[in-house]
Image (cartoon, rainbow, N blue to C red; front, side, top):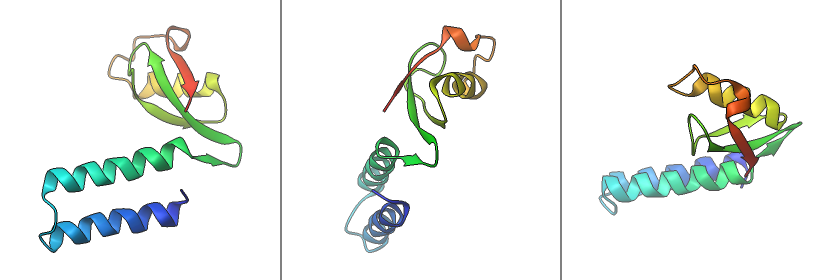
Length: 93
């Protein structure tokens, strides 16, 4: 899914909420699904999405050029920034 498609899908979800055809929980699910789909298909330039599978920030998804950069980014974004990048394991989405 490209960025324009993602934005259109989010706009459709918001419109359904505004029109009363969806409640907030439904709208949140739709938007989260759009974002998850966009992230899993994300590849631009020399970057891609990586998911933290172990360590601080587990479950977090970051964009980076390689797994080492993804680990560093995940550590920087994690609440427990005391962890070293080598303690965090990431995998491409």
